[in-house]
Image 1 (cartoon, rainbow, N blue to C red):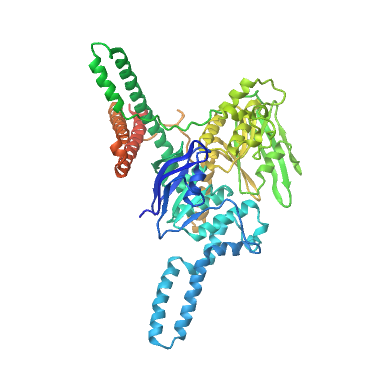
Image 2: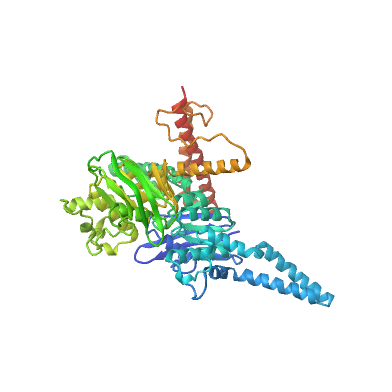
Length: 634
């Protein structure tokens, strides 16, 4: 059954289409991640699917029996309700259902006529089936589970909605949508206002749900945990990929390689054919030249690969610092309540520290204490010899709103010519007329990249970053992660992006309401320690003990023992031969996909795409087998 059928959607806001011939289907249980660079039209497409925006062409058909739910972006609540009452209002239909069932039970008990009693009994049985199907007799438990999962404490249940913060009100909107349980769920950045713990709860909730989901998210861990397919929206068109985000990322790279080879071969063929025609059109081989000209006119042109290229970025090294870059001793800060106290740690040259913890534990305040924007109540923080700090504020206040971008990124006191500044901004994906626009006209992602460009130009050797991925798309995040891991200085950053924490950090400062912990490692190391601690607590409660597991090992750097075989022994040459066969098969399939008779038949297109996906999965395994064989074959 098709719950949502999207066919040939087109939408324009100017001369160029934002969406062009977008088509896909959503079936029961599908969990589709909608990804694409900033400005690609993801929110526009979701609004069209939700019926909040009309397309210029094409249709969106929702199955007659299906209910669709869309996560609103602007909270609007009637006055006078508590948090609990507003959440409960999402279940009004089920509340009425249980009340009707209770009334029928009372009517059956009071009925004196057997025929009337039997008639009421049949109706009651149908209602009971509905009640049990929706677990409607346990609605309070359902509400508690969702509210607590999204970070609301029981003490907050009786608070008026109007006293909640903007972020809390957005979480309440998400809670109401989850409680309604629509058949098709449209989510636009659902984890934006959630800390890591609440995000992990939401991931598990959605992954275990039977609902079909279309979700826009920049959280790669979230997309990996929740999605079973990826819709890539770029240049107005959608490409579909099976699997989660990591599978998409790998398939995309392989598909781009194949498409590039196919495109280059065709361009080479066209160039050679045109050269033959030009040289022989009036000579002895004129007939051959005319024949080739006719064949060339019938060639179906292969499109170049749809490559989404992230910015280059990069942070040049500053001067060398002392061994200790910053020393923090017994640092404490509170406002209406303690944020952190007796915080003590050293960061050494070249280390990359990530700070994580629940919302409200003072992570941003800690960074502001270090850079001198906020005064600590006790303790001290001292920078080492030769340290030059560059601070990225998540509110992006370091850029002057009124200045043109090309002037706003100029560091004070630095000789920096306009061509140098334009090259700098181009490295961060800001080109053309946009560099002459005032900062206040930039989008969130553009402003974020301008702030990072300003930081890159400041020749710092200690980067302090507060939520640097907040406004970046997936490709800009990838570029930033690569740039930071290549940076020769020292880094301290706050982030709720677990993928970013895992890839960049080599130390974690975990800030909790009553304590702090230093983890030597990345986010996976931290998760391993949590699992290990939970296992030890579980074992001790049962009076048993288990052998301590080994932490996750880093990639082999030549110092570790040779790894064990994952694949059976095969000669490298045999694997290479099969790789060539698979690559050739994929090229043939892509060429077939470009044929008009295939493109006109949706079933043939889908079958061909599925075969391509299968071949690419086999090819990816072959590459891994080839690497293993090169390393281990003696």
